[in-house]
Amino acid sequence: MGVGLPVRAQAQQGFISRKLNAPVPGGVAVLALGDADRAPEVSFLDRRVLVVREEGKQWIAVVGIPLSVKPGEQQVVVSDARGQRKLPFKVGAKEYVAQHITLKNPRQVDPNPDDMKRIEREMAEQSAANRTYRAGVTPSNLLLDRPVNGGRLSSPFGLRRFFNGQERNPHSGLDFAVPAGTPIKSPAAGVVVLVGDYFFNGKTVFVDHGQGFVSMFCHMSAIDVKVGDDVPRGAVVGKVGATGRATGPHLHWNVSLNDARVDPAIFIGAFKP
Image (cartoon, rainbow, N blue to C red; front, top):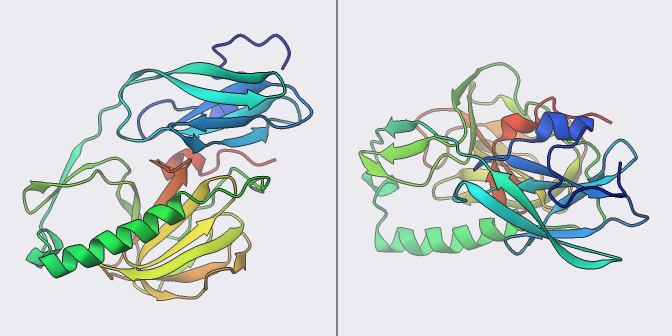
């Protein structure tokens, strides 16, 4: 596996490829890059992509596909000792269902001008955290643990959301309905890159797992970490709450890959070296 791979090199035979490959909007494309002494650099939509060795053999790119990407052919740019080349892959179609939510606070649907200034500032902060890319840091594991024990999945990923009848951005993570105060655990080892208390997301923590693989935890009642903390897998980063735009206690968990919000469920139990 490696030398002589076809140009269109999607969904090869390795374990990661079999478990993670879900090339749809909001999903993940696993692309074979071949064998080499050094990892190639890969980018998609001008964002660096996670590259790991699969089972100690070939290099693979684990590409996050934004919800906004249209089905059809896409391509990554690969840079290695041979130069630069484009590697195409196919994105399939996926339909996400609608969810209608009623909020009692109208400002959480139609923010006033002062709210909007705050929201714009906070969005810039959080966008920067999602763009975090630590080159040369390989995630210790592509398997992610469920960050809370018990409860139920109250909102899956990708829902087309309507608040008080008005369409807003799609649901970019998983919501777990669990009691307030439930410990929130880091689903993999990482470094805390941002903490804050935001208009929509409430008390929030971002953990960088390496190479653009980032978890975000929202609506917390308490934050137990600070920026710069190294957090091992299973470390408590805070507690479940209902801060920000929330109708009740729950954890909203986002996963970003190359600055694309992807379905965290893809990674739960996906791969353990």
